[in-house]
Image (cartoon, rainbow, N blue to C red):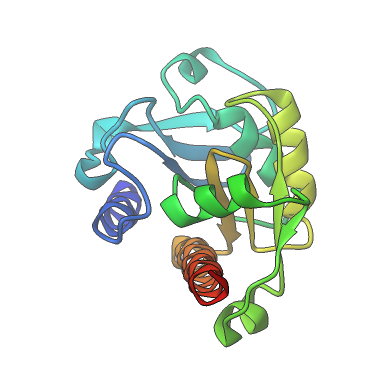
Length: 188
């Protein structure tokens, strides 16, 4: 399974969805999850970069697991997700910071409208129970969510689905960002 996490870690870095050391990936296996270690380089994941932790409670390996383990844990506890990807997608972060309402981003591209409908924007500090609560609540009805100023969390039944939701959210935010810039140029 670590090879599958490694494959999608490389895809995230190569696609520009994360810098090498930022973001994390997990999969649910029964009542446990496999998650990337804190500070691991997503484009060079090795077997030793994956930590197995309990989904329902913290344990000693949480000390070396991603700082966002609490968020992944609550997502698995509250949704039917079997895979979670957290990425620091640049256009998603920009759009969350530009958002005046701070509630959702409505995609303007047809794929984003069809696939995502809307992308909630939530708040919460890195690795906090507040963030876990807000993200897991939003992901009950959505495939992807943006944490204001921080990045995306996306879910799927398999890692490929979570990756697609991550890529779609970033694509929709990129398109919307350039549309906003073009509108400003034509107005000015």
